[in-house]
Amino acid sequence: MRRPTTVPSPVALVLVGIASVQLGAAIAKTLFDEVSPTALVLLRLLTSALVLCAWARPRLAGRSRGDLLLVLAFGASLGLMNLSIYQAFARIPLGIAVTLEFVGPLTLAVVGSRRPRDLAWVGLAGVGVVLLGAERSDLDLVGVLFALLAGGFWAAYILLSGATGRRYDGLGGLALASVVGTILVAPFLLVGDATDAMLDPRILLLGAAVGLLSSVVPYSCELVALRSMRPAVFGILMSLEPAAAALAGILVVSESLTALQWLAIACVVAASVGATRQRTVLADPVPD
Image (cartoon, rainbow, N blue to C red; front, top):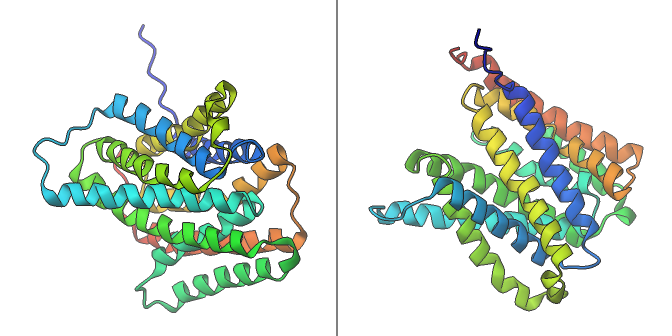
């Protein structure tokens, strides 16, 4: 008798993706004394571009000017988002950086809403950001600004990702965007340092591992999960990112957070869950 094929739970896939991307970020942070954040971003994007292009085999032939401009914008948001958040990782704890970055997509989730309840969630997230700023001696201002900038690019990435997915099949659009992001980030190495370390086989191997953990694995898990999961439920699960980043910082980089900082992270997570939950209630169930 043929055994039934075991299909991973979409929730499990999303959780694996979250753990993978934050583990990749933590590993990257352990290398900042040897190689610049920009160099690691380049290695991450290059690995992602090579794997995704080999997998998706995207084609440009027959694409309209609008299609090409869209993937260029998508790639720019992808590259600048990664560049900004890695600069933040180099200056402030992972959990705090991702919490601040998460303000971007959270704001996008409720922008244009006229419901007072959604404005309350934004206010709660604002409380979290204020609490993070209450201990200024522990936070580098440049790192905070880079994290907020990354949040803006993350919001743009979300909008452009949806538009790209409607025009390109499978992972083709993401593969092309990864190529664009790689080309965009490369010139920033000219103003960086420690680029010689990129030729070290150990750094190249770890950089490739960061690319797989931070891009290929989570993107693949999310792609499969979203085939049978409501986007609203997906959004709630993604709200765990700040907490996952904080735990990765503790376990891999030995970063410690104060009780006030944990409270700030909890505020942002709760605000994201609350804002997204409204859409879960209104969403139609996914057919089996």
